[in-house]
Amino acid sequence: MVHVIRHPASAELPALAAIELAADAKFAPLGIVFPPGTTMIEEASDPSRVYVTGVPPVAFALVGTVDGQTHLDQLAVHPVHEGKGLGTALLEAVCALGAVTLTTFRDVPWNAPWYARRGFEVLDPAEWGPELRALVAHERELGIEVAPRVVMRRLRSVGT
View (tube, one colour):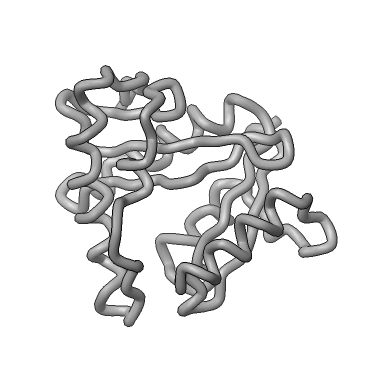
């Protein structure tokens, strides 16, 4: 199935928070609870940093730049729409931009193992740039380091 990936209209951005919250709720049974406050997508005001699929959107990817590379800040699929390839389609759209880094939970099946199956590799801390180090430190300050996390990177498109 082909999924249409697009940038959202500015008016669609506020509704994406519900997708992020629903996706984050899947972590609670694992003992992972995110800090209170705004969601990552609520802090995004530039639709060009966001990719969505669905009308209205049912999944999104939020990207930024860290150490001069594309960084996947957040990938969220509403649980009702899981298993349809939406996350993979969004990830491939992001990876079409070039090398991509991300931070994720090492042992959560739909996190590091999922990204590894899509060509991402754990990045040794010696390879982290100053902005990536600062990002990881910030996550720890927020209390996100409640389970082992890793930094991952994909350098090229899968199959090339």
